[in-house]
Length: 195
Image (cartoon, rainbow, N blue to C red):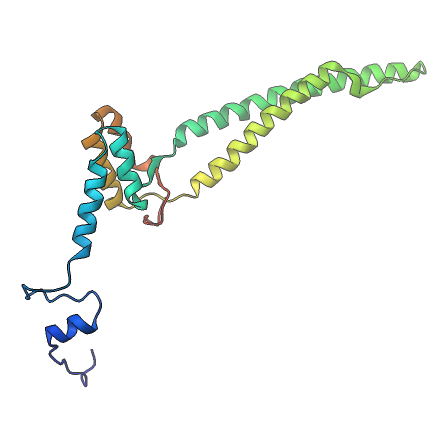
């Protein structure tokens, strides 16, 4: 506030009429109902209308977008990715062996004046089909993990709310995932900046 500005007392009745949502904290006969309290009560009543357990936990997650917090299972994704990464070189080696064998046969047959079609080799077709499947799975997981790693961690207040709701509605062993902060992702914008 600058030194030239002055505060003018506001008549509470005038303020209630001209400023939407204004309520005089000292006034006991305010005509404007406190809608935020009643909306929270309505949401709580709606969530509590579901039976305890995963039904109520899902309702509380659905109640606020910031409660859309889930595990990303980073360790498991990385284990599968590392497995596929280790499996692909074996397939690559098998394909190279087939190619080398074929090259020797073709060279021998070409010297004798015979033609050999490399694409008809059944072993090669089978190994290429297996490589194609493994590569597609590998690529899909790489891109899904890249996207998942771009998600942010939940804000502490949202994580605490989800933890509280989980502990209230499911058995402790099933609520333990909410304590794994390093493995949680938020699907909504109410997040911390670091991930």
